[in-house]
Amino acid sequence: MLQPLSLAIIIENNVLADMTLNVGYGSRSSPLELGLHKNGRRLTPQRKKILDLFQRIGSGIHLSAEEVHAHLLQNKTRVSLATIYRTLRLLVRMGFLHELELSEGGHRFEILSKDNPDHHHLVCINCGRTEEFESEEVVTAGRKASESKGFKLIESTLNVRAICPECI
Amino acid sequence: MLQPLSLAIIIENNVLADMTLNVGYGSRSSPLELGLHKNGRRLTPQRKKILDLFQRIGSGIHLSAEEVHAHLLQNKTRVSLATIYRTLRLLVRMGFLHELELSEGGHRFEILSKDNPDHHHLVCINCGRTEEFESEEVVTAGRKASESKGFKLIESTLNVRAICPECI
DNA sequence: GTTGATGCAAAATGTTTGCACATCC
DNA sequence: GGATGTGCAAACATTTTGCATCAAC
Image 1 (cartoon, rainbow over the protein chains, first blue to last red):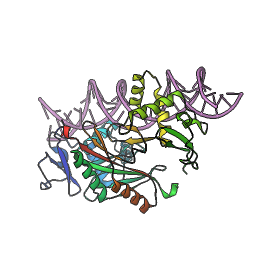
Image 2: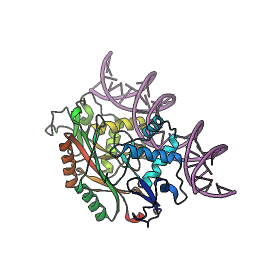
Image 3: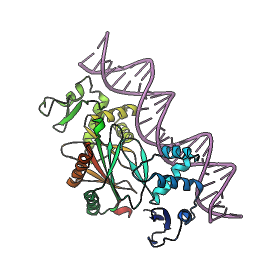
Image 4: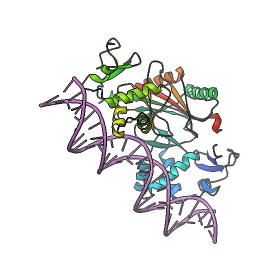
């Protein structure tokens, strides 16, 4: 049995508001700091820094836990790797980040925002270069597959492995 | 620059024949043992056992390296994990196995055969149950994306994360 | 003051590698 | 006999965890 999850949604592309499965876009009351405040969760400086980083860096960029760590260090912020892993997991469960597993090179994360709807990845298997694209057909195919087997869809991601022009 | 690869194709769904980028389906001369015999490669008992396992177990089942190891042990065959990793990588490069990375639970492998063309996976994020489906639209979407960015397509795989009926 | 979060170091995973020995042709 | 493959143990990379301490609320 799956646990009911306390989710968060992005408001004004900048703010997290907690919703416990029943609050919608309506409750646009609060600045960034209110985001992680509900349900006993805390907005700590570390979490704030990680959120800020993803917001600054924008969508379409995919960071590994290591890279998040390194970026923060450049900004003179040291957050332990353990905390980064814990926070990334949390933010994914809250729907703030999207986790992708491209076959080459481990798990990566990117911000999920309204400007940056469901999209898919074209990855060069040689140099790792990654391009994004959207496709309505893919979304439809995933939905149809879920329905036909009685599954409840969460997300579908198409990973296209290919060789980029420079590596051909 | 990408290395030219010595490939193999499956003949009669049972036999591997080596082809060095210029030999085709034509050379259907040989029983299973001839498969890994060319280009200095050898068909060793270990490789044979791994191949046999995937053939017996059939398509639609996705094994991790660990699981391959365990299955072989059940058959009273001990092959070191290192060899299993090396062999799986080899068989993927030869086109005999297909490697998939489902977000939950690491890399898995399945046999690739003519009965079992390009297909995609619907995975329950709770219990791991996996269903397969085919979709022409997905293949098309991957091809279009590659073309539009000038990439050379290798494969596209749609992973649908969902919750299965039992876990809802 | 409670509860939840952090940092550290250790452990657990998953995968790769160096090397001596075995084996296939 | 030379090239290729295996097993082992060690190395590695990545991620998770136990625990004492710290800090948000």
